[in-house]
Length: 294
Image (cartoon, rainbow, N blue to C red):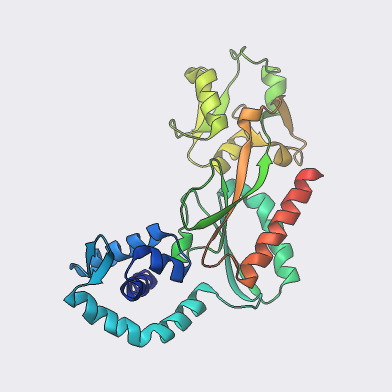
């Protein structure tokens, strides 16, 4: 049986013990929405109702009692299993999974190497993808996310930094096409995402302000957008901190407040206070904020 199914059984067991969703949520230290989601998912998985729902709370059905008797007998072993799988404990050791969007990889990778050198008992897994890894299912321990503030109920979200974005092109492009004046777009080429409905603020600005026929290079990933800019495809958005390390990039328009890329540090409530997660969170906050202040 999967970890998700065991989580659902454990949650349902606490609902049966406490008699209410709120009581189970308090006992488990999770949001009440998680309790409801786990119970509904387990019932759907088994194809039967485990509880009768009424104004006073939840009462196990006959099928529910059969299942929950087994859960009661194995609760101690299950708790130990979850602890091993999810990395509970007081040691800064074992596997630590960090996830971010791919564009942040050049800046985060050196920090993760530095962390590994300071904590040799840690094994880092760095997962970069556009999709959101599910912290509630143990897919990652720490997530660095960009954009609007994440709103999943079981996650602890901390503001990490605001990154300035600006428009850049290569020196060769500037020599060929000249400088850029806002509003005077003719004669220039632009590079952007292929996602026309992107909610990213700086991409929305480009779609709303730059004529579509001048956007001549689109890419599905921010990393590919960046590579297109470096190859001379046109003008596009680059993190100012990244551009400062590349002497071939020329700033075509300075940062605007509405282009800021807001970064969030996200952990799951069940793992937030474990030693290795707390150590990583403290390290990232100190290093990235010091870097921003430099």
